[in-house]
Amino acid sequence: MKTIYEKPQVFTDAITTYCGGCGHGIVGKLIAELIDELKLQENGILVWPIGCSCLSDRYYDMDNFMALHGRAPASATGIKRADPSKFVLCYQGDGDMVSEGMAEIMHAAIRSEKFSVIFINNAIYGMTGGQMAPTTMLGQVASTAPYGRETLNSGYPVQMAELMATMPGVVYSERVTVTSPANVAKCKKALKKAFELQLEGKGLSFVEVLSPCPTGWKMAATKSLDYIDEVLTQVYPLGVKKDASKEEN
Amino acid sequence: MGEKVFMQGNQAMAESAIRAGCKLFFGYPITPSSEVPEYYAKAMKDRPEENIMFVQAETEVAAFNMVAGAVSTGHRAMTATAGPGFDLGQEAMSFMSAADLPAVVVEVQRPGPGDGEILAAQGDYFSAVKGGGHGDYNNLVLAPYSVQEMCELMQESFELAEKYCNPVVLLTDATLAKMRESVVIPDYKELPKPEDITNSLTGKKGREAHKVATCGDGAVQWEEFNLRLQAKYKRIAENEVRYEAKNMDDADIILVAYGSMARVCESAMKMAREEGIKVGMIRPISLWPFPDVAFEGITGKKFLVVELSAGQMVQDVKLAVENKRDVTFFGKLGGTTPSPKVVLEQIKKLV
Image (cartoon, rainbow over all chains, first blue to last red; front, side, top):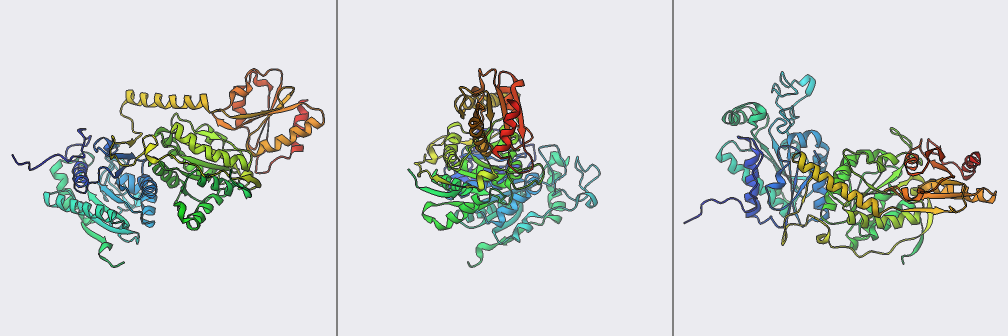
């Protein structure tokens, strides 16, 4: 019988703690598929954040580093500088990266660290119960913005993919989402590009993924997908923001 | 044997670290520790054959987390800082101790609190020795009192960090860091392979996956995790106590001091003996584990604890002595160091 689909080999048998309709699991599977396809399991180190993905060391049968909140890019810097021959993936959510660890990600980009960064943007703090993130939309209700985010008090949503694209040290920046099979395919393509650029020794490669959080948004799973396509993408437009790999050295 | 040179404390210590195989330095410049990153930055360019890597971090927060990442790969790495930077590193100190990471951190003390001054002080004893971060953990803390001892303890710090899978703090101060002394720089050391370091992240080829993780998973698991850590601290406490005791047999008064203050107290002890006052001295070298054993069984003598602080180590001395009413404290704040004559005056008050 012909096998048409298999669980990625790098996955363990652990069951994820993600809620139904969450985007983390989709991205997590794409990462696993790429680790298999690019044969990164034995030579890679995964650096995880604090947030919903903070138990990810259980899901991947390879070396894992669970960083402190916001500090994943700093620890990834230490790992990659100590052993540049390793594939290093830094995975962060919006609370971790854009709030607690804004300095660490910005300076990893400033230094043009040679690792890949995946940024899961779900516009909210998922793990801790739906508090406001720096990426929360204006007017969006969160437990620490019970009447909706207001600029007077909390400023404006942060567009990380665009911000990273302005940095000379970033070789690639793209924003994708996982709201449809076509978008999932595009997400995988972006991740693959980011991983390959690292393997070529280029600068920091960055992929932002707009990811549904039905639990945090208090929204049905299918409606969450529509919310991304119709609302989030207005502030966070999809697409390649920078591709310096095509430029001459 | 290495060669004898006349060298500044910070620079000699940096050279000693390089020879201990610490080729990775992550740091944020802060007085009075900046000669250490400067030394590494220059060595990285001047000595390409040694593969030295220096990264100037954006903050101490980042520097400590870079060290955490680097040592997780089985390579030796360190940072150097002063009190305000050490504060910022506390989250990572707690993490590295919990994660069994063999980091080495040099803390050059200067007077606080707040922005403080850039002179000499010993006011960061509590944050280094008691573990300034969250949760139940301990740093192994070593306190040299000469440039020579700084160089030797620098080398030993890496070995101890790897032996116990725990951060080691080399606690110095502005006086030791900035003074120049004649020193024999230790030779280059044979290094363990990164693969041979416990739980190192080198890629899982040919073995089970390794992980660095400090996330709890329920009270039962987390209690076990903590008890395992406590067993580690107990092993350190049982095996790594270091101190020096001088002129103890006939002493009526025993000085207790560490670091640069111990240098001054040594001179004060000599002056007192010349005047016929029987003074001895205990110099703790490991501040954690504290050398309680040095104080055991001593009765009928007076202890004079001298620190460049409002009284921090004196608390540990009081816990260690047989009778805490035997303990007197003399401290100096602000950044200046009392002369041996000033200490002698304090000794005479106890006669």
